[in-house]
Length: 87
Image (tube, rainbow, N blue to C red; front, side):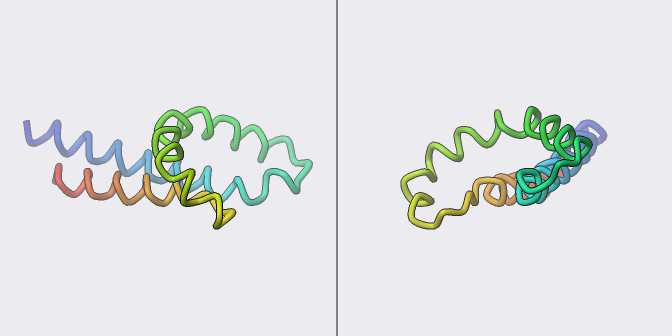
């Protein structure tokens, strides 16, 4: 059971990196014509958006006034907490 928890924690760490990459790419994807950057953003978005959608629904009323989507950072914090609990 300990090995399984460690494995899940490692998967959560990898997913955290994907969420972070998607958040960073979102800052650049609309200003670039580079198709590789756009494809990476599209791929990571397909992995990340299902987890971000519920967080965005909760944060939408608050984030409207900010103009910044903080849901990836909320998800990263939640993933880190979960990974630490599994360790």
